[in-house]
Image 1 (spheres, helix red, strand yellow):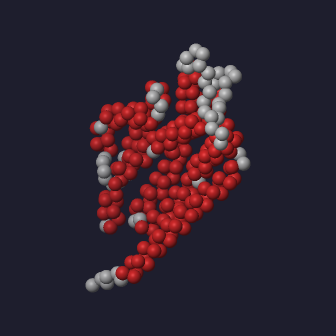
Image 2 (spheres, helix red, strand yellow):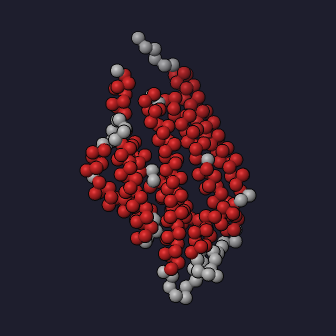
Image 3 (cartoon, helix red, strand yellow):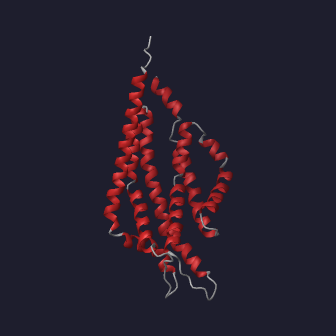
Length: 253
């Protein structure tokens, strides 16, 4: 006959988990702070680097502007904070992994860690694709279609908001293979079902591109087509994944 856990033991276990969670969060925040301090000196250079695709596309003699008094300080500060979080992402995910790993089965650990690493790499790849491929194309397009007599002078704060949305949109869109692997692994769907719904998913990629990018066909297509390709790659990866219930039953035997 198994013993019923004492209420005090349960409470101590809960407090222990909360303390560990707090320590993990503090370590993640400390990593962000250390990176931020190291990068803040270069905050203006970082903004110049991020603004380079637009600056190169601006007509000769045009430049970016700051319409708010504090913007020349606040905008590079915000950008440095964003970059610090992105750079610290491996540390943040490692702390998350260290917190949840003890509660996972052995067969779950085998797939969870590769998924965490792959998700970080794919997010970085999506952000890099946005910066090196999408930004030069869409900024050249936007500046080229400006009506005659209109001077293109983008506010630095609005530019940061715009590019951060695109960074996040492309970073999340590149997580498509991870989402497919997780759905197959958890038994939500199968590769065969996803293949049967391919036409609807392709249309969905273009709808997502329309919702997450500026209202022009170029940037929407530049997001939708990679998502479609990543969907196909996710199907290939999903063939190598066994559903979690099947793994658990084989592990028991």
